[in-house]
Length: 279
Image (cartoon, rainbow, N blue to C red; front, side, top):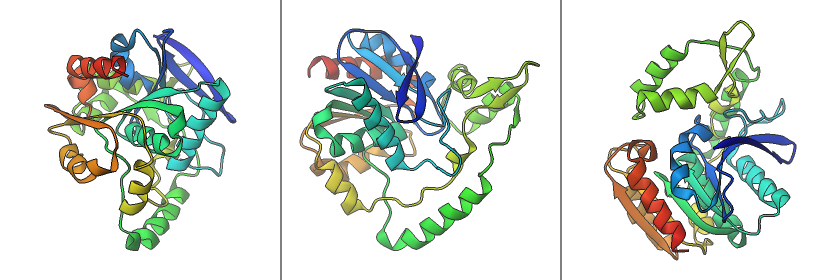
């Protein structure tokens, strides 16, 4: 895959692209990951134009301007602006975790733009009860004050890989690849985080279950959900609860953890290839 860059509104979004000639497949990574986390799936999409994005504030993409933050709706706006500016009539969206949530939300908001959705260890948006709104918004505003300035923090890559592996199911070699893309290096060879610290602020509001259903039920394209047996997401139970929302959905559960596409790449990749070829 090659490095490439797109403009989305006022942002520069970096990406890894395979330069294929078929339908555009946009890869959307998970929270605090980047395009590198989706690189392993590229061999299974050789007949498509696969573009794995660094979402705003992640990897090598632009940070949002001072005073702005990273709301779910803003990521959806970025995605819509990209699709409109590139004049792509229809795309396939492939997302992991947060990226899978964004993919399904966008497909519900703009069904005419989406040919298919592949959602890895995500089944629609995270939701909260309406009576949590006051506390949620208050905590989010307080968290923003702590992350206003983008301070450079010296990073030891080996220590960062070890810390990531302790709280994740990613093999060390893949954790290193993801983390390297979230780092920048100065002239002296010192490493610093390039990702925006404002990513760690709390969500201002989450949808209620009724609001999520309203959006998800507007999806008209086929959806492939791939869950992981050992993931904290427990996608099988979430899908069982929500499957009536979807007109054309398929669910596959594989043995593995949250980054199932990096752990069981061939199984996931073959499911994706089959799904895309059948569209």
